[in-house]
Length: 86
Image 1 (cartoon, rainbow, N blue to C red):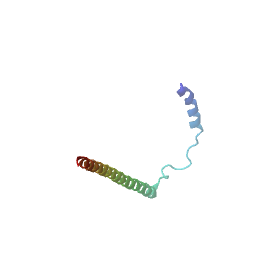
Image 2 (image 1 turned 135 degrees about the vertical axis):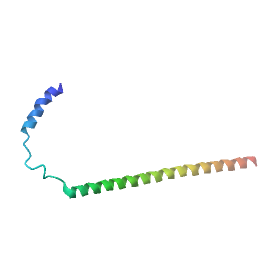
Image 3 (image 1 turned 30 degrees about the vertical axis):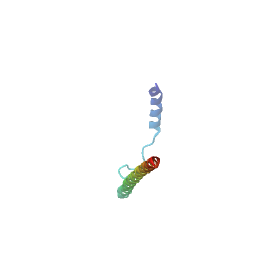
Image 4 (image 1 turned 135 degrees about the horizontal axis):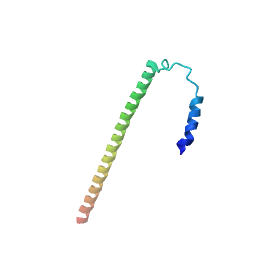
């Protein structure tokens, strides 16, 4: 149903669109565009590597803190058990 409504509208827009006033073969980004995109890609890869490193470091720190808290809790439990036996 919507195709029947949009088809005339699309044909009107396409008919009203003027042809380009430039030569599409001469409008290219050139070497400067390639270098710019390459730099953006390299920067994105470096940022992703840095983010992965930081996330990994935070995960390890959280695991170590959990282990230390578990050891401290076990030590307090053991000390309380020794104190109860005395």
